[in-house]
Length: 293
Image (cartoon, rainbow, N blue to C red):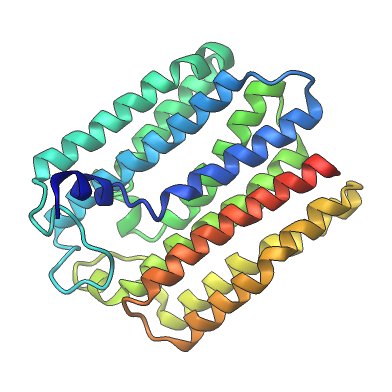
C-alpha cells in the first residue's frame, strides 16, 4: 500500500458521504424560504463538517490503537495506525490539523452567525476529539449514537439553514431528525460488527451492553422511523417530501434483511457502506421533494 493510499483510507472514505445530506437538505429548505443563498457559506459549512468528521476519524484511528481496540484480526477495514502504515504521532497530528482546518473554514460562519456559531463550532471540534479521547470517551460509554444524531442531523442541517435564514423552523428540525437518524445506522452497524473485539477492551457500545439482537433492532428502528416521520410532511402540504424518499425503502429493507440473516462478520463492512449510500439517497430525494413541492 502506498503512503497516499494509507492516508486516504485513514479518513474512512466510506463514511464521509454522511456529511453531505444535512448540508443538501438544509440548503434546499433555506432556498425555499429565502430569495438569496450565500453559496460561500454553504461551501464553508460543508468543508467545516468534512474537516471535523475526518479529524474525528483520524483521532479515533490513533487512540483506538493505543487503547487496544484495533487488535489484529478485527473484522472492520484496516486501521492505518494498527497496521503500522502510519505512526500514532502522524495520525494524531493529522487529526488535530483537520480540526484546525475546521476552524479556518468556520471563520465565515462565525462572522455571519456570531457567538452561537462560535459555540457550535468549538463544541463540535471538542466532541470530535472526545469521541475517542479524554477520560470518558463517547465511543466507549455507549452514548456516541446520540452524538451522531446531534451533529450529523440537528447541528449540520440547522447550521446551514440558520445562516441563510436567521431562524430555525419546525420543518428544519423535522428534516434534520430524519437525516440524523439515518446517519446513526452506519455507526450502529460498525458497533454490531465489532461487538466482540470491543467487549475485550471494555468499549461499552450499545451492541456490547445489550447484545446482537438489540443492535439489530436498533438498526431496524433507525432505518425505518424516518419514513414514519416523513408522513408529517403531509400535514405541511408537501406530498413529494413524503413520497420521494420512499424510493430508498427497498434498498434499506434489503440491507436490513441481510443484517438480520448474517452473523457479524467482514460482510458487515458492505452493509455499512450501503447504509451510508442509502442515507445520501434519502437526503437527495428529500431535497428534491422540497424543490418540487
